Each structure stands twice: as C-alpha cells, then as structure tokens.
Amino acid sequence: MKKRTCFVSNSSSCSFVCEVCGEEQSGMDLCLSDAEMAECENGHIVCCEHMRDQVNNLPIETLRSIYSSFEDNEDDEEVVDADLKSVVSDRIFDGDDGDYDVRADVCPICQFSNLTDSDYINYIEMTKGTVRSDILGEIQSKYKSYPEFMDAVKASKTK
Ligand SMILES: [Zn+2]
Ligand SMILES: [Zn+2]
Image 1 (cartoon, rainbow, N blue to C red):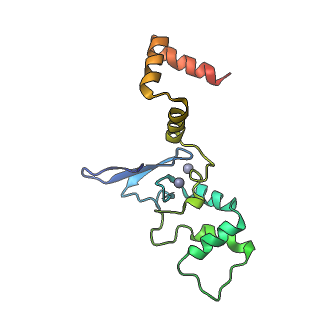
Image 2 (tube, rainbow, N blue to C red; image 1 turned 120 degrees about the horizontal axis):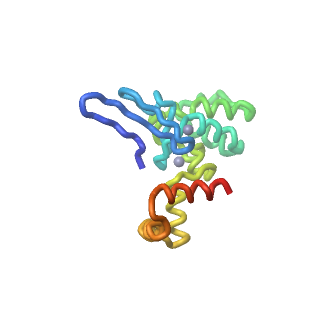
Image 3 (cartoon, rainbow, N blue to C red; image 1 turned 135 degrees about the horizontal axis):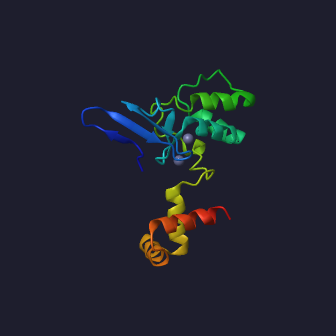
C-alpha cells in the first residue's frame, strides 16, 4: 500500500500522508526523510516521531534484539540498558534502507497501537460479513440526500 503520490509531468512534486496522524507533507523531489516520515516493512508510512515513541514503549529484550540487528556495532562497545532506548531511536533509520523497510517492532500500526481506516474497514467487512455495496444500498434507502446522511452521521457522533 504505497501512499506516495508523485506528479511527474514537468515538475516532480511528491506528497506523503502519515497513516497514524493524517499529516501531509509535500514538496518538490520530496523524499521520505525530508518529510520526516518512514515506511515500515509492511508498507505503512508514518511520521518518524511515532516510531520513536514506539521505541520508548518497547521492553528491554526487544530493544536489545533491535540493537543487535544494527550492522556496524563495535564489538567492544557494550551499550548499557539505560542507554538502549536513545541509541535505538537514534539509529533506527540509519540502516541501508534508511527510512524504508523499518522493522515492524517500531511501527505503531504493526504493533496494534493504531488502527488505520483501511484496516478498520477490512476488519468490519471480515467480521460482520457486510460489503461496500450492501452498505451503499442501505444508505440509499434510508436517506434522500447526501446532506441528510451527513446530518445523521454528525448527530450519531455527538451522542
Ligand atoms: Zn504522523
Ligand atoms: Zn507497519
């Protein structure tokens, strides 16, 4: 699921949308690191800060295993537990792939800390057995116009 949108007509303006907070960054020749976003190994694009927040919540064993996966650790340099969080969050985007293919351990979506709209929809469809066309038919039969539908949605949220 690539969220990158590029318009490669005569300019190369790109934009990225964070799947956690919805923030959008766009610009000419923008790359993920310029946007301060990263993509996890399962293709989620999120702000780097959400991944760093996730690092802060990881148990020490996970931090230790992430640390040992870094390639250029010096053998004689043992990182103490107290420093692991900051070392891991500083280096999590330093690998060969940089902001791409970031480990799922630090992705808030892969860790079930956040539910994306598409996962929400997929889950509802899977468990309730409803499909988009059923829902559309139901909406069509209940509401005469789009504003009427919007009003009903608004009213249900203020309950
Ligand atoms: Zn974000
Ligand atoms: Zn992910």
